[in-house]
Length: 293
Image 1 (spheres, rainbow, N blue to C red):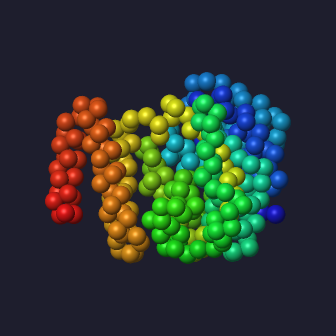
Image 2: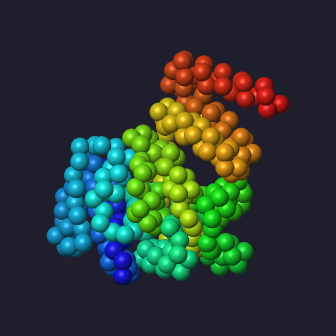
Image 3: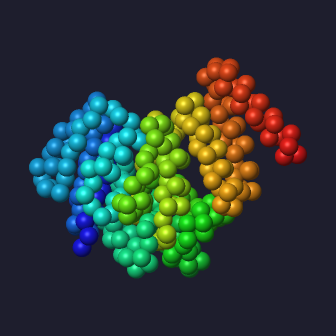
């Protein structure tokens, strides 16, 4: 069995961390290297990690001084000694078969990336399940794709694969894909990165299991107004537009999506009172509106 490195970025998630680690150490696939990176947490996340390190010798604990989520992922990649790697965020949990499902499908298809689906759990304990594992039409989506075929799924509103495309987690990667790709030190780092990894692969496998539980916390960076995040999302979309236009990947969808991302930036700039960003973004929106009509 090949060694798989599990990279867990951790920042102030003590209330969720034990459940996360428990879900990893009890995976049915056991040949794991579990890299817990405590990135400047101000809670007792480090002591929780050390406790589990003393229980399970597959665990490595790294302490850093708040590098940020992108550099933390990069550090985990540099440390990883497995042929394959996967990311699990420190406040999320996974089904015990997550890695087995991904690994088995990756080997079956001889692919470079295997992807599973996910479900959401919010702070009020409300679950949201985007897929139906017993739905035959959805089940038929399981299989092997070229990168362009996979990315084109984003333009299909009701496709079960669509929302799996951009999160860094819920995927098993061959480590070589990261040879020349790093996560930037910005909020929304995955918007700059995951699509590049998918395009760098030769084949991508999708398994129709919702094995990843994404904890949607009310105060997480993705659930609050954030001008910096809105700005980087626009920059990331602009970079994708360049590549996708050259590669002829759902260009019409990108054209219709970019104004939505830009409007988020305009709204956040207004709320933050940043007149320069607001005016520049509005000027861009006015030009798009003029020539799209």
